[in-house]
Image (cartoon, rainbow, N blue to C red; front, side, top):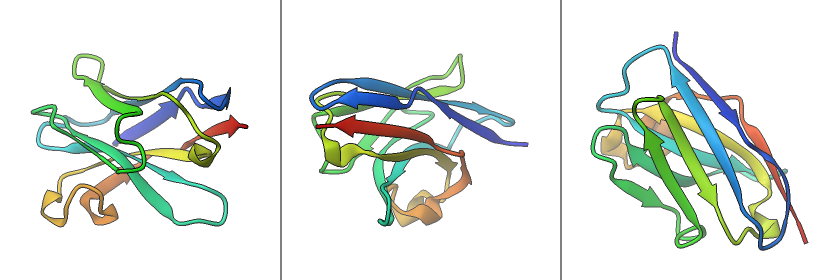
Length: 125
């Protein structure tokens, strides 16, 4: 059974940094894309970043490009999202996702088969 377990969320001041982690288990993720999405209160879930498990290629939403970095540790089966220069508008529940229907384009929900429960990130002004 595939499990994606996020951790590392919390409260940080604007301009600060935070790293969230996603521990993946239950299958091999070769050929998969691991992504981060976020959902703020009253808003739709938005794509943040994604990484190819095999190649390490990455893709970012314009809103986080240059501030966030996604990475993975294949040996630990973990994906990270390093978030720098955080802004109050980054406040959201951050979800980890895994999937391989990449023909839809990495930012699309339908790429992803598996989702974590989410971790709250709150940025105070």
